[in-house]
Length: 124
Image (cartoon, one colour):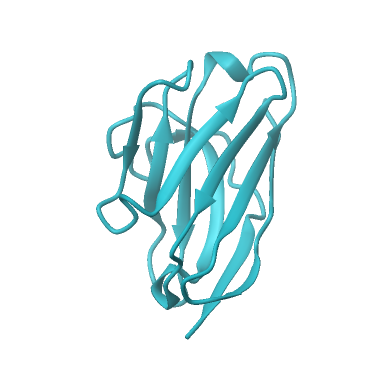
């Protein structure tokens, strides 16, 4: 089983930026499709972004398109999410997961258990 540990969250003002990281254990990270999800207060968990094995194909939720960028470093077994022009509605716990498809995976289109996530809070 692959262990995924998210980090990089914090408190930021609206319009600010954060970069999230997801460190993966094991030597098979490059063989997985990867995605970011989030769960805001009182909301269901939702898809944010996904990326293919080589990092050349990406897909985003409409709510973050143009503001967030997903990337990966297979040599470092790390997934990233650069978040710019943050809005209060981006406030959520963010999770990384192995996904079964790049285009709009749902939370059930994922493998292994959910980690602790990293909290992002955007103040207005």
